[in-house]
Structures are given as C-alpha cells and as structure tokens.
Image (cartoon, rainbow, N blue to C red; front, top):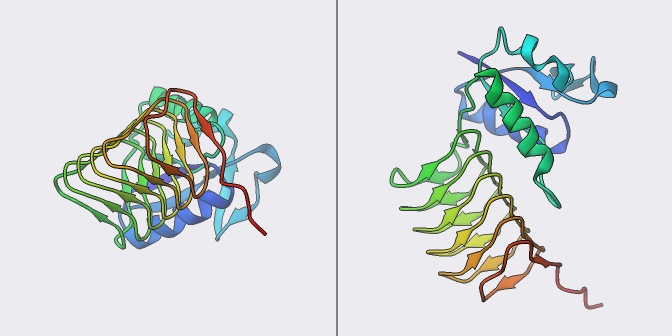
Length: 208
C-alpha cells in the first residue's frame, strides 16, 4: 500500500487520519507540523518535521495531503498546497467510504470528502477542498479551489462558490445562488441571494 504524508498535525488532521484509515488506499507515513510538534505522535503516527523538511520527506513518500483546517482564511492551506505541488508529489483526492460521491461528479486534487458527505451528480469540487462530515453538495453545484464546506452545510443545486470560500456548519445556500471568492458564510446562515467576493456573513446572533 502506498504511503501518504499529512501536512498539518492538529484537530483536522485527526479527522483526516480516520478517513484515510477507513478508505484503505494509503498508509499514513507521518505528519508535518510546527516545531513544537516534531517528535510527538498523533493517533499513533509520528510528526516527522516542519514544512521546511518537505523536500526531504517527499523523496521517499510521493503522496501528500494538506490536513490543516480552514475557517477564517484559506491562505495557509493554499500556501502549503502550492509548496507540495512544486515538489512534484501526487495530491490525491481522498473519499470516505461512508460518503457518497457520484460517478458523474468531479473532485480536484488534494480534496477530502469526509464521513457522511454527499457530492451529487454533475457537481464539481475544485482543488484542495474540504467537504466535511455530513455536508451536501447537490447536483450541478460548482465549488471553487481551496474551499471548506463545513459539517452539515447544504450547497443546493446549481450553486457556484468562488475560490477560498468558507461555508459554516449547518449553513444552507439556496439553489442557483452565486457566492464570490474569499467569502465567509457563518454557521447556520441561510444564503438566499448572491454574495459578492469578500462577503463576510457572521453566524446568526444567539437568542437566550
């Protein structure tokens, strides 16, 4: 079984490890983290180095995945994805066996589809995306590169989501809506009209 290097050693990496173990296509060679994490373990896998060590680590392991989460900004995930691409390594799409990805849908390199998620027929998901647990990407929706569709979010049919956008947990986007690049849609939001690039919709206020 080929090995895969995970770039990021925090909470999101734990969830990615669980998906990778269940998918059964790769063995986790280890993780890349920050300096204080080097020499520790995450779910039994060693943190082997920092991103400065990527060229040497990828000489023996030719598959990699960005396993840092994304909420407010995609910048770190984008930077790490670009660094991995420059090494010439393979960035596979990873799909939980407990998810459903239609054979009529497409996934970009480095994207992960987590437990319980659905990517329906005609949908297209870009590079380096997170389709998180129980998220829905309905038919003919288009998700740009470096996006995070968080837990239980619903992207309805024909929606277009621009690159680098975050869609929060339990958010729902009306069919046919367009969301621009680098938007942040807060947890629980209901998006009924188009959003310009850079739109920030915070989570609805808590009612006590």
